[in-house]
Image (cartoon, rainbow, N blue to C red; front, side, top):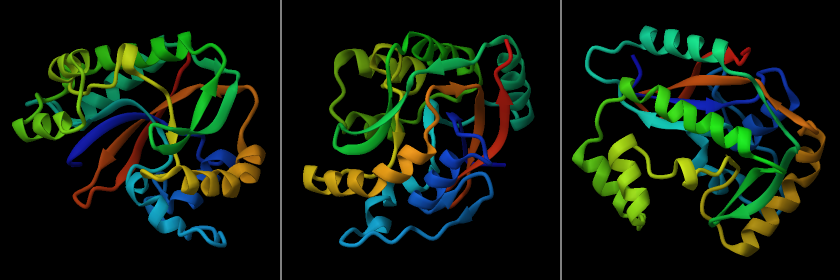
Length: 226
């Protein structure tokens, strides 16, 4: 059993986007294997990607959580399959790289109403399967300087950055300076352009599991077919 679970968006395993993300971050969450980083002159890719590496290339839809008492991994898989059967896919105009809150990420362009609605549904639908936050988790989250709404959301739903505070992003660096961010974006601009579909169909959600070393693995990917 994994330590924690999460629901992410991950690109199709055999896609150019998934391949780019795994190579850039150095961790393939689908295969559970480390990957050699690309060489970028003047940039320590391993250091830049150290923070997001353990999660694999993804966008968070429901942040990592521990299972509620009596809930099993099988229960979680069954619930996700039911949800996916009843939920339609989301079409995005595309993704664009940018410097966001101190890190580099891919973010959607265009109308994100349907995407934000999907994320909110997932937060609500799976919350009954989540164990309450521990005191240490609450204290750690509050170190980020949450506002009153975010603090209330954390206490009620286990994570502060949901609903109005949700911003879909696929992280490509840890916290970096603007100069380092420019170097990262210059290095990834060509491979990202080749890998990104335009428009982009978000037609699946992925159940993830965190192992005892802190690395996340893809457990079960469900197609949105509603």
